[in-house]
Amino acid sequence: MTLHPITDRDALDLAGNIMVDFMPMKAFAEHPLILTEGHGVRVRDVHGKEYFDGISGTFCLSLGHGNQALIEAATRQIGRLAMAAPTLAANDRSLEAAKLLLSILPSQFTNLKWGGGGSEANEQAIKMARQYHKQAGNPRKFKVMSHYRGFHGVTGFALAATGWPHMKAQYEPMPGGFVHLHTPDPFRPPFPATPEQAGEIYAKLVEETIILEGPETIAALITEPVLMSAGVVVPPVNYMHKLRELCDRYDIILILDEIITGFGRIGKMFAAEHFGIWPDIIVLGKGISGAYAPLSATVITERLAKAFWGDAPVHYQAGHTFAGNPVSCAVGIAAMTEITQRRLWESSHTLGLHARQRLTMMKKRYPEIGLIRGEGLLFGVEFVLNASSKERFPADISFGIRVRDSAIGRGLLSRASHWMLALAPPLTTTQAELDSMLDILETSIADVLNFKDVRALIAA
Image 1 (cartoon, one colour):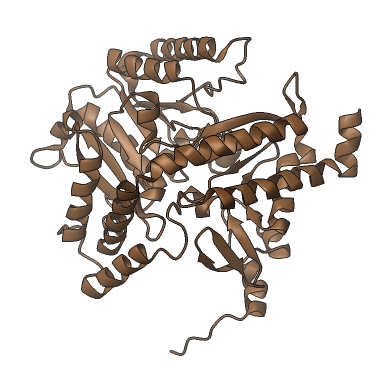
Image 2 (cartoon, rainbow, N blue to C red):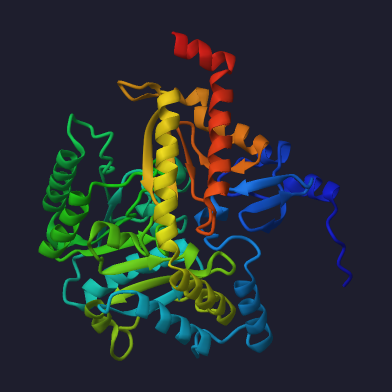
């Protein structure tokens, strides 16, 4: 079979034949962004135009594009062993990667199940929590609590735990046994409160939910330490401590979904360190392989692992073809090694402080920046129509989307909804590169504020 390279024209014509994540096919086909290569923190499209990769692919390309150590790790392993029979054997690279990962985590984490992506890993965590309770003598514990506006993936259980109705409406009814909690947003509580007070009240609402649902029926609570799709919401520290206390009190497995926040993204190796708590199950992905190969991990403590040790059928009864793939694990070893040796969480912390200073200055010039959120190199801005009331722009104005599109035109890729915009550049970004991204963001905000309908709305 002869391969025929795709020409620029072919790429544009074929854009209407693929489904891009979370984007209408028609909208993408009309204005397709087709990337062809990348180097460092920049990517290039089919026309040769360059962009700053301000979202690290999808919050995962922590070590930038063209990283030779990761490329060489994949190349060597492909030539050595590209696939191992996952239902019959482990492979040496998956064992080596497991040893490295467990050495990075606290000693109570002793066992893990590899996956190919975040949805798989969260699906595994939920299944493990339910199976654990059945095998530990608590078969009535099956319910899973999670937050409204949280995101845990697009597969069955992971989507049921996700707290956005618009993501689930087309597929309802969802699997049963999922209970949603208030989004622990310290700056937008449904009642007047300081962030500290909000943390206490949100926690009381969680406990009330546990009691009303019946503690004997609740298996797990899964949450992102930073709720990305909710607007880069960082919960109050006291709230996270209360969650750990409540889970201990009512024998509920606490699952931290660190798919985005793990491996240095928020200025700590893991977000659990930021809050000073550790879960019973920690779910990792994205940065674990620097996005050079699909890899995720569901890691459990020794206490949980004991319930899965024994003769059939107590083992965890699920698997994925590419889970623990030797090529993915070889890349994961290289990525985890580089992140730890270079202590990239420290530069993430430093650059995050710099970004916050820049954004704070920007906010003084543009009161439409209502809130600055995030930690480390995961930060965002929330746009408001009224700074004092924090009233957001109407959805039909799509302020955040307009800023994103203006920034794309100026060479910056970002993540946005109609009311917010987020950036998460590679951990290898320099301060000069970060400043260039923020310069584009500010210019784009100014551009959108000059739109006729936006000016009229503000004036009204």
